Each structure stands twice: as structure tokens, then as C-alpha cells.
Amino acid sequence: RPAWHREEKNLHTWSIRRYEGTLADAEGILSVEQQTFRECPYTPAELHHRLSRTEQRLWLAEAGGQVVGFAAALRTGGWTGPRLEADLLAVHPACQGLGIATALLAALRRDAGDSREVRGIVCEHNPASQRAFSRAGFRPSATTYDLLLYRIRGFVPRPWPKWDGSIHPLAEEREAIALAALGGDSLPTADRIWATRHESCALTLVASAGAV
Image (cartoon, rainbow, N blue to C red; front, side, top):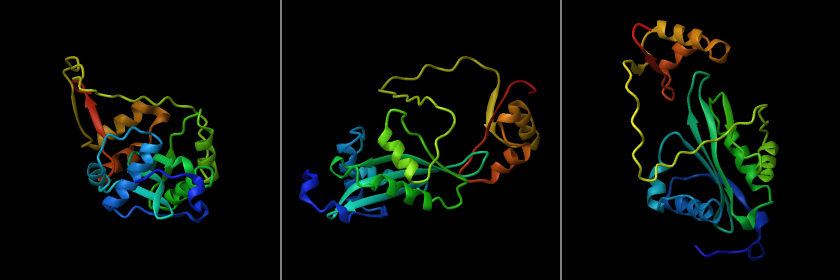
């Protein structure tokens, strides 16, 4: 798609819609990504395939018949219940400052379904993104976190040290009781941990050593 500039189109006529699962939508998302993050390694066909996963939630912004922004989220699970994680937010440079990012995030919040929480990770050095999240109704957490990214780059990870224990899915209620006791106030109750075994978006793994 050709590059274009703010003055070439009436950008005040932009609109927000759901991702329709088409290859054309994937091409539009990739075009915006290449103008912003420039990190996506996928072809349009590969991206189209990856976005077909059921846990994906995507909303697009259009102006002049082109995709000019997108917000992507993942539906995840855990001991506190389903959660919607705002994963990526991008707006074409020529369309920034028009409220598109805020509208995309607001659409994600409305699309939360039964998720108990909608959250996103925002860089503390990105005030524009912070404003968009705030205007869409998000509140900053009291704690600042470090985001660690691991890039494989073709290297084989170092093998784990020898250990005589085992790791297996949560299978017995006594394991949930032990986990709750181990975590103290930082973990949910044993009943809540035990209930997650029936949730399709959550998997609790238990590490055991000897008789523990």
C-alpha cells in the first residue's frame, strides 16, 4: 500500500470496527505495524493464520478505506479468572493525535465479555500511550514492573539442572490447599485454585519434590 500523509485525506472521518478475519485486514495491520513498531517477522499470510486463534481480540481503525490503526488483545486465564490483556496498540503516524488509540482501547474494553479484568502494559516513557489508556478508562497500577523479553535468535536454551522432582497439572484438591498455604496472602484461596481446573483458558502446573 502506498504511503500517504495527513493532508492527503479527511482523517476526521475515521471509524472503528472489529477485525473481520480477512487477508486484507491482516495486510492492513501489517502495514500499520511496519510504520510504527517495525518488528513483526510474519508475512500477511502468516499473520492472517496467527490471528485466527480463538483467544485473539482485534479492533481496527479505518480512514479513507485504509486500516490506520489497530488494538490487539489476548484472552488469558488464571487463578483470578479470565483476563483480557491489551497486547499491541498502534496508529499510523499520519493519524496520531486524533483520538484513534483511545477509541480502539475503549472498543477492547467493551469486548471484554466475561473477563474479570482488562489490562495492558504501558511504557513509563510513553506519555502518549499513557494518555490513551487513561482516556479509555484504564487506571495505572500502584507498582511499576519490568518487562523482560527473551529472544531465542537460533540458540539452544541452556538445559535445566538435574532435579528429582516432577511437574504435572493440578490433579488433587490437597495440591490446591498446599499451593494456597505456600503463597500466603499473595495467592487466591484453595477453593479458587482448585476451581481453575475446569477453566479452558487456565492451566495450573504443580512442581513436586519427594513427598511434598
